[in-house]
Length: 484
Ligand code: SF4
Ligand code: FE
Image 1 (cartoon, protein in one colour):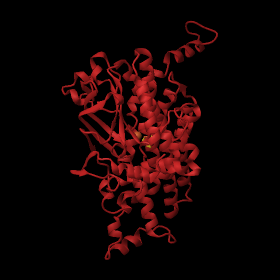
Image 2 (cartoon, helix red, strand yellow):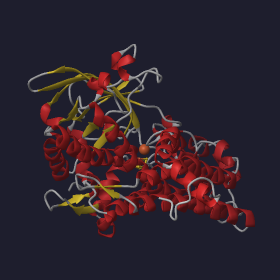
Image 3 (spheres, helix red, strand yellow):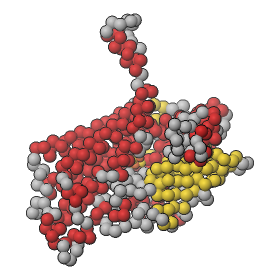
């Protein structure tokens, strides 16, 4: 396994093509716009080394028996699923920000099981290839980014109906030694600081869309692969003064990129689906289930830090003894722990797949994520309520340190007399970073927008069964002894 330093060094050796704010970025590890994201991802390596987190962050590989980082593991029990959730909460508590590595982890679990099913039905050899890839990921302890969302163009049209065929990633050429792909994947969490991307289709597909049914691994510095890093709210603060960032070490979001595939060559050994359109929907559903399972883990870890910051600020501001502040803090805890309950429940109810691996219960995993789209906003609302308007009006670190006006900022930003103004400013900035702008959008749309969860919940809700239950009680129609 790699440690944090080895992870950073391994990234420095790569030469991916990355752009941000008109600049070509040669080194993400040491560039202030990216360092917090690298630090957050590095925690998945550093905590694996720490004895107190070993049980959560490491596991025995089912392929080799070797001790591996859990982020490279394919779950093989309910315990594995539960430990994933606990691991995410534990890391989130330390980073207060997205640590990114889960997307590729979930992608690997999805592709592992679907390649097995494709091979079984069609006699292909994708699972063998994928298993060889997975062994390499495990032995080198690689960070893989999961790449699912296409740019999609006109949402009312299928991939092959789009005016521009590149709006979904597709195969443009098949060669003896591999395939050539073109298109783009969006919102790639951790994409610029991963070793490579595991690409999957973005939706269920029909026969006419077979060219879009493609899954493969691509190293981050492959020719033709272009990363365009997204802007985040307050991102220029990363490059001026550190205190105003709120969470200078780990940032407030994962760091997402638009990744363009400009005729990228993929050798066959890295291709895990090529034209088997009838399995595209399975990859999407299994990946979505795995990633939605997570959100009551990582977001609860973040909420732990946010609740702590809000509590600490109320002490500094002298409001901590007010009854309504206590009540609101308890409400925040209830909202957060509800999410955790959901993630633990969908893990305990996980199902074994034909490949032998385990996947969370899809209905409960989707419920988890749909709750996140509401509870995280409500937690943030309560944090902002308790904090006060100072969240939006605090002067900058530059003015606080200014020779002429700094003394006024210091004097009037103070809360209770015994605590320096700096403590209050730091807590305010942390709460601002965790509850404003991009950080919240992640809770809404990460792992798929709420409507995607509603569709999957609707599909699995079995309303007919519920109707039969009601009909029996109301003495309408057939009256079986037990409704099944
Ligand atoms: Fe992991 Fe959470 Fe970030 Fe998704 S949002 S990558 S589950 S930390
Ligand atoms: Fe996410």
